[in-house]
Structure formats: structure tokens, C-alpha cells
Length: 118
Length: 109
Image (cartoon, rainbow over all chains, first blue to last red; front, side, top):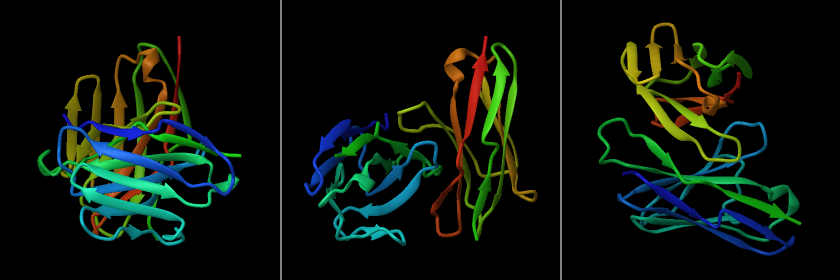
């Protein structure tokens, strides 16, 4: 149980285009999903917390108009990188919190999406 | 500020035991997680500690001392596939996860 999928796994796009990344919880309902980015050899950086049916909460320094998050259902959250630039190239990872997994409040991660902006 | 410290890199021998330490200074404490992350992949959950003491799960064990702001992950009978980064994360008073930078573990034959 507690499987999270992410699509696509890799994407290469031209500068100025938009890219949508999907995150799905496959065998559980996730009222909360998290979006992270990770640069090479660096720690995970939380970008935003996504709650089903409400607006996402963005971390300081993350532009909400550039990184659009939609959490329309209990199993799906999407991150859209708008007007992508080369500096947005990174490893984007989503996670979902399985509230049915006991009181550990564990986050389960998707496999990640490697974005390369040319 | 909030801070999680882990060694950047460690090397160990196949079949041996290694201990990865994590110290933390956070605004409140609501649990500590250890995750394993292989290169180019997302983290996978290893363990969770919220009370002091040792939690054992197969070859992996995790220890917590809340008074010392300290945890360690103990890996026994090391295998080559254990080569990965190990991330320590603390849930603070707001139930936000604060992540360490990770410890890269290199296993040699």
C-alpha cells in the first residue's frame, strides 16, 4: 500500500513553455500532498503544500504564479511550471500523506520528475 | 532557526555495520523520520521515531534521544545495494517536515 505515482518521469522543454506534472496516490486517499524540488547533491526543498479542494500553501520564496498547483481530488495533484526557464531545471518530487497509515503521518514519495529546460 | 545536521558522506565495507548520526534543533518536535534515497530516485521511508529509544526493523534500526536532539540510523550486514543517501527529517511544532541535507553512504566490497 501507499503507492504514489508521478508523470512524466522526465521532460525536456523549451524555455518559455509550460510543463504540467501529475502526482497520484494509487491506493489511498491523500487530503494533503507536498511538492518538493531537489538540485543535484542538495537536500529536498519544500515548495508548497497542497490540500484537496483548497488553495495551496507556498513556502517563502516560491512564486505561486509560476508554480501553479491544483489538488482537485483526493488522489490527484498537479504542478504546472509556467514560462519555464533553464534555472527551473531540477528534480521535482511529490509526496502524499497517508492518514490511514496510523499516527506516523508518514509521507510517501512519488518517483520524481526530472525537468530540463533548454 | 531550524537546523538538521548529518555527515555529508560516509564509507563502509560490505558486511559491516555503520551508524549515521543526525542532530537537530527545531521549533518543537513531533517525530523524526529516516528516508533512503538512491541517486536519481525519490526518497523511500525507512523509519519513524517519536519516543526515546531504539526501533528495530530488520537490518535497520533507528534511535532517538529527544533531550539531546539526537538520532542515529544503524545499518547492519551492509550490502552493496545500501549505497544511497540517507535523509533525516524532523516534524516541528507546526507538523512541517524539516529535512537534513542527507548522508551519502558508499559501500565498498
